[in-house]
Image (cartoon, rainbow, N blue to C red; front, side):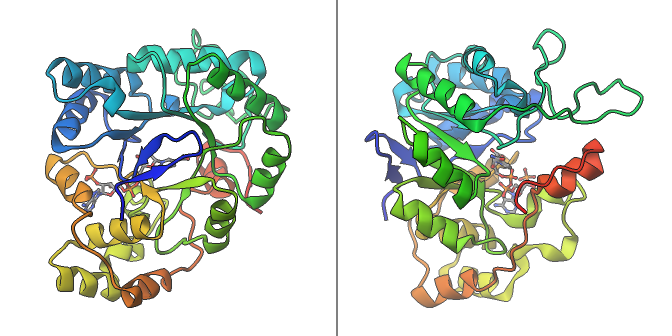
Length: 326
Ligand SMILES: NC(=O)c1ccc[n+]([C@@H]2O[C@H](COP(=O)([O-])OP(=O)(O)OC[C@H]3O[C@@H](n4cnc5c(N)ncnc54)[C@H](OP(=O)(O)O)[C@@H]3O)[C@@H](O)[C@H]2O)c1
């Protein structure tokens, strides 16, 4: 098992990265620096996470301290929903570059197949989901932007040397097939929710056939969604007996088993943690292997449970019914 996945560009996507969603701004710079020292080389950032400038400070400190060089880091960022129109894509990317303190991104992803009306960075940054949060009845404001328009502008970022690889998040097979019908530069990576309760076998098989690398987000399942009231306490995959048995057999933690399962089925994983001890734990998944039976038993936990579903959270949190997977 290698520690990287090779993309069509020849670039090597490190199999484990640190997810930066919900890492509080005041902690981000230190955590990023600690992560680099702990051996992380892959960071999963996004405009929407609101902490790119702080992550940038962390990269700068780590590089200045000699912990790594820029070219040893893999930095992913994501185009937010309000910037899908072609004229907004490059400025959005340039803002992320500036905040992250780098002159290129290794990977830039369309965050959601959801186009929302433009909000100027002078009005609000990051713009998040509401068009006008101060309105009496705040809602999302969809924009009619074809994904083909956004993708053309993403391709231009590669041509301009601002980003090395481009890809998408939260796409299913139909959207990918459509994208491949016109892409001059094919998507290198698909990032989607993947954990033992949402294994998405057919999507992974399709991506394998099309040579699109896959990164699994929320690889630990419910954990990320408990504090958001988007998951119930009894939905933790880490409590599953098959996971615990494998952990006991291998002398590893349930989280390591679940992350290893993700990597062993051929996907990169980007677990998030705010705890330095867990940084090391989540990276230490290269010195053991799950048996074929364990892999099968963990995959059999699939129950099609999607925690990050705009069809749910856009209505409950943003007063806007916005299904995308149905
Ligand atoms: N493209 C997209 O639309 C999208 C959507 C969601 C997420 N993502 C990306 O994917 C990354 C990871 O997903 P996520 O943050 O939703 O969830 P996750 O990484 O699966 O889980 C994070 C949660 O698990 C806890 N945790 C971390 N390591 C642990 C361990 N070893 N043992 C027990 N608990 C542990 C964390 O708590 P502590 O922090 O307290 O340790 C946190 O509550 C995000 O940060 C983001 O970069 C992308």
